[in-house]
Length: 167
Image (cartoon, rainbow, N blue to C red; front, side):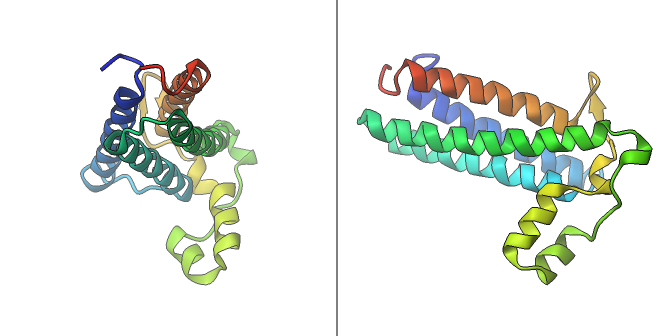
């Protein structure tokens, strides 16, 4: 497998997503850090990226147009992850007096609002999303996810431009 080959990158995306989810579950269940609505949304993007990567790896299509579909779906999902993590980082960078009020919890939102309204509320974020509970090398969890999403996006875009078939 070539380093930037389609199948290798697909497997790498799946393994990366699984690793990120294991880390998220560790922080939630072992360290006791409860995810805010934006954290949950970012997890959804990570899971989708992992599923696309796993499916692409297992399918290993020979046709370039099918590989481009996988790459396009991954890039769209990464763009959503970048937007969500970017919003989260932005909320965390606000001065305390500019932080929005805390909204209802995620379960309450999902139980009491139509799905489209619930999505809007989740992606808007709230005061609890502005709280920084963990950092490593000066970056919060959403900061690290933003960086990871951006790196994966650049690699995927380079692969798409170079040609999905060139292995």
